[in-house]
Image (tube, rainbow, N blue to C red; front, side, top):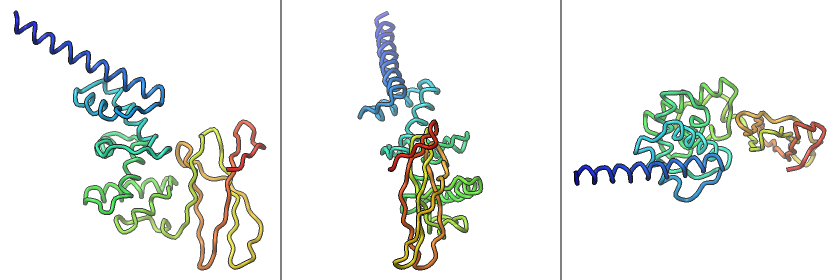
Length: 219
């Protein structure tokens, strides 16, 4: 009876700890606030084989935080993304692990094959990001990636982004032209240009409020 009671107490403490971890993670996800200890809590919760929906939601949220806000993430999360996206399609997690890989000095053979395949596939789908250029020398990039200059801006998905630009050589700069940037993913707007020798690109951006298309706000 004594052993049974002791085992029961340990089990109850474990359940209580897991419940506390789950509440903290759920609160962080829904509030959008990241407390310093959240990654430690997540690692412990995942180790206890917690609620899979909470785990998936946290991973996806962190992928967005990394892509859209530049939040630093632990290496363990990127390792998870690498495994997860090979089992099930998940665009934010795929983009997060690719962007992270692009910043590495060297890639393993497995990573290089992974990046080569997915960058090529995304490029064919017109999902083109500035970080692709960082893969130079590490994978076989699509033909035009290195020939182009990319302007990238992250905006609220409720806004379009107008790019006002001029390309010139020498002192005669000419007038600005205006184009709408491509909202490639979740408010990441990109526009690519081909510049010839001695040409320079000069630009500024403005936000277009989708609810009021005639209203522009300079960035």
